[in-house]
Structures are given as structure tokens and as C-alpha cells.
Image 1 (spheres, helix red, strand yellow):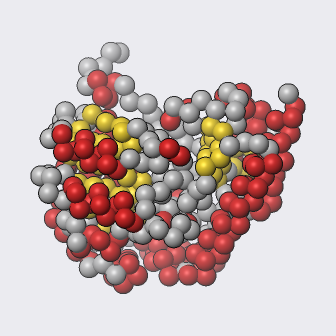
Image 2 (cartoon, rainbow, N blue to C red; image 1 turned 45 degrees about the vertical axis):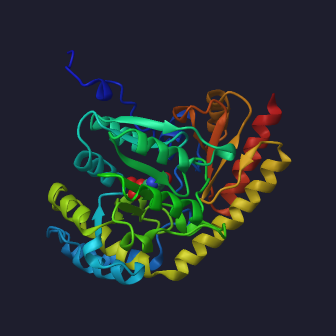
Length: 369
Ligand SMILES: *Cc1c(COP(=O)(O)O)cnc(C)c1O
């Protein structure tokens, strides 16, 4: 059947998630497979979260609280933001859908950078929007000045999407550049800046700042947070948005009332306060990154220093072949062909033994030729 479709929908390329472990085991008849492809927390659920979830089973026959009341109070306290500036979603990617839908009219545009997280483009296209991508600076860094010029020159641009730090490159925008950008764009009518801080807990760069406290200063700033990474709840699907109360209010009108399930609400409250787990995750991530830098250096594979929980590196051979060879060895990494990178990969930090296993197999595949 031939559907009548808008071109931006007809040309949509579905998001390509990391290959599941089970699928890889079946396809290559492997017992041991490690997955370093989706930037998940390798430490798994904290004991405290598990306990809270077990208790929450009792209430699972009830609908979840549509206002996420208790989580809202906890997040307001932890992140020092008033409750009327916070809302939650079924994973932060749900916000991308609603924001592109509500803030933009069909045929208008959003701007982001080349090499930016691909979900912005998918959300924009699925709402019949055009996407402008500014070229990256050296070292794959975002060019905020170019995004600012674009927004000034083209009145149909409604939203700028900035992942900070960015996935898959691991690059970041420093506090000074970000403030300059927000100040310069504040007066552009009906224009918003979405800063996606999925990885800010992993940043070690001294000149980085979370813009979360700046939401009370810039009305056009929208900050997205996720519980999928440092908080280890990727499977439960929960994200947070911090924005001007009028943005929160319109989001609450369009979202589904029960979009955040009971488990997610309970788990997020506990994970948020589990500072021991957060610290452990940071420590494992930073040690893993430093290990990868050393080993990739020894293998003569170029990489970009990362402020996330993953590293972007160049295999220097066609990604499809290299990927297949690694899968046969039981290692799942993320090829980046859908980002237009023919030879590059993103490798998430795992547990120390997983990192060592991945490096061993990369070395094996490289020397097999
Ligand atoms: C992982 C990630 C997210 C989180 O998405 P969820 O839908 O909350 O799991 C958001 N932004 C970026 C850049 C990411 O890499």
C-alpha cells in the first residue's frame, strides 16, 4: 500500500539502538557477549533502588501518580529549582517529540550541530520540521556562534538543540560560550534553546557548567535531564525537563497523563539521593575512560577526549566490516554510519573487565589482517 506522506516523514531514518546482547548471542552462536553500545550504567541498579522497587510492587494495580508529586518535591530540593519549573517524561526523548510539536509550526525549522545526538533530527522531522545543521569546529566541537547567526538570519528557526556534553562525540561547550549564546539569543522572538544534559555528571572539564541554575535567568532556556545514565534507570524510561513555567504548563497539557510509570517514579526518587552510587559510577567511568585513552593510544587509533561515559574513536577501516568482526568476538560497540562517520565508533565505558575484554578483541581484530 502506498501511503500519502509528508516528505520529512517519508525520509525518516529510524533510530538505530545498540544491538541487543541476546540477538548477538543467537546470531553468532556465542555464550559470552559484552555490550558497550548504549552508554548504560555498567554497575546496574543500586541495592537501595532494588529494595524500593520490590516494595512498590504492592501498588502496581493502581495507576501511577500523574503529577509525580513526591518525585517533583525531591527533584526541586536536589536541583534547587521551583516545582513549577519541572516536569517528567517517559524517557527524555519524549520531551523532544512534545517540544518540536508544541513550539514549532509545520514547515518551520530547528537548528543543531553536525555530529549532534541524532534524536533531535528524528523528532523534528517527524513533526514536519526542517533541520539545519551547523558545521562543527575543530575537534568536533559545536559552533554556537554559527547557530546564533542562523537563528538571527532565519526567522523560521524555533529551537536550537545543544547536547552538552554531546553524544556520540563526547565534546562539550564551556560555561562562557554557553552564557554568551544564551545572552545573544534571549531577545530572538519565539526562539528556544534546548540544552540536553544527559551526561553532565560525568564532566571533568573545569570550565564546564550545568545551565540548570540559569533557567531562572533565561526564559528561553529548556534543560533536559535523564535518569538513564548516571542514575542507571534506562529500562524504566524517565527523564526530566527544567524550563519556564509556561513551557512546563503547555507540556502538561499535551503529554499523556500516565506517561511516567509507578516504578520509574519510585526508582528515580531513590537513585537521585543515592550519592554513594553516583560517586561510584563517576569513579568507574573516569578510570575506564583513562584506560581507554591509554589503550587506544597504544593501538594507534585516534580518539576524542570525552566528557561523557563513552569514547568516540576512529577504527581507520570501514565500520561495517570492523563491527562484524567484533560482533563475532562477542563485543558490541556502536558504529556511527547513521551519523555520517564511515570508520568511527562509540564505545561506552563498562566494568573494568568488560573494558579489558573489548580492548583485547579490538587488538585481535586489528592484528588479524
Ligand atoms: C542517552 C541520552 C539521552 C537519554 O535519553 P532517554 O530517552 O532519557 O533514555 C538523552 N540525550 C542524549 C544526548 C543521550 O545520549
